[in-house]
Length: 67
Image (tube, rainbow, N blue to C red; front, side):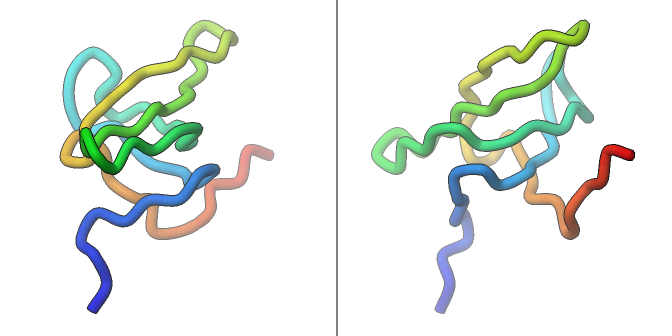
């Protein structure tokens, strides 16, 4: 049985809560003990690092193309 909150480094996710709600980013760090992820999102053209709990993000069902 797969774990409900299993994330991989480099995986794309969408933020579900807060100021960055609906932003998409990539997982750069996973802390399973604290159940948190460090997500890199682009804000005003600059990468920003945000720490969120597993419950505050959702996996994207498919790869997002930026063409």
